[in-house]
Image 1: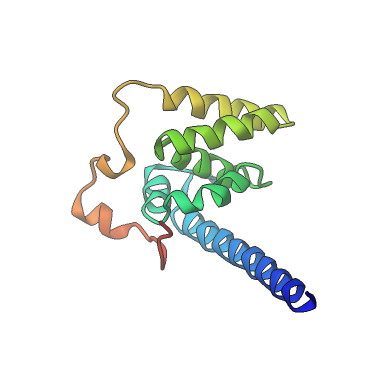
Image 2 (image 1 turned 90 degrees about the horizontal axis):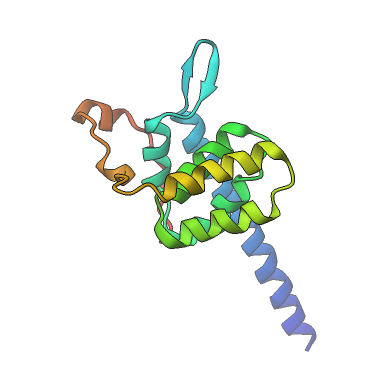
Length: 145
């Protein structure tokens, strides 16, 4: 019985460490692809495309956690990618909206949910870029499915 507890504790610890590691990896992707205009850091299409190319449905919990990060750029990037992830992404946005406490996060999530309902909204992968632009996007080492 004691061995089972030790294994359970180790498994939980490894899961938490993996989630933190994945969070950090996705955060680096966002930061490497963030745009700057008028001395302000912000999300652009490159940021969203880079992040979307790195994530799969298994990353939805990590992206959901990013929706509550203190860094507003991470919140915007995560919400933009969750919109692109179909019904599971929209469900994550709705769940986050229900638990959002501050007005800024609620408004961001409301905008994302409204954007998700836009008919004919193209997927991020279909965003028109030249080969040079696509080559300049810095993605991540692994994609979790």
